[in-house]
Length: 341
Image 1 (cartoon, rainbow, N blue to C red):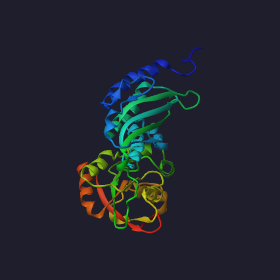
Image 2: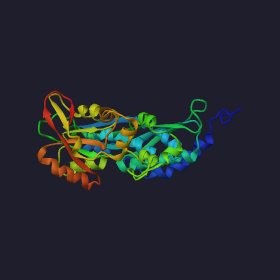
Image 3: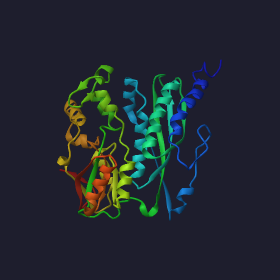
Image 4: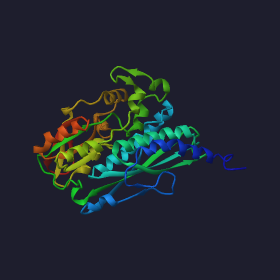
């Protein structure tokens, strides 16, 4: 008896590392010390010494049951982008610049080519966000997970000068809410998605005219990463007063998280076109509109609040970063919360 006969292939682990090295290399930043394969990832803090009061911000997340679609479609090179996005989009809401990222893959059986494809997506997400992929772990769990399945989670660390933190403290009535378009469902609410649509290859390969793609292609579209868009706004000299990543809990849970006491947000639902996938999901599942806005991003993946006089500059900056902005509402005085009208 040996470890391989018990279900854990150490040689496959070595091959996975070799295959992923080329992708990881493309995420390196000057601050990274050493390379992949050590017991820890080393990252120099020399660059942040010029900050008055540097603050580290961290976030961890996974991709939820969206991963089931990757299994069914046997496509594993984009789910890693989702994992990075779910983490870095959270830390940038506080004003951070993402520095580095680590991933954790648990699998029933280590198939090196599949693991490398997953890490390829993680590396692409890191490249989009400017974070270095400094390490990770691939754990083989025979008997605990089916051989053809895996789970993926990640951890991001960013930094901001304390004076540049986004905390909602200066919000006031009249401030403008700018929504940045999502790429679709992103990585939330897939348990409901999987209840509405048949999760078979035939169903996922069905082409929908209104989507301009198959159902599977639309649902597996990676989560947008908003690092460059928010940086572009700041570089334009605009102060982001508050920021919300619209993830699980949709508008009703996430928008109040960006608000201070004494103000509430008003969002105008007709201020932008809700993407077709949400309309299809709502109609096919006979889902109440409030449930949709309480579960999904409904086409808006990130919301920033800025002073009214800065709104035009902010939207121009977001467009310059390659994203699509919409003025979707405003801040008013009153009890903290959100009103959709």
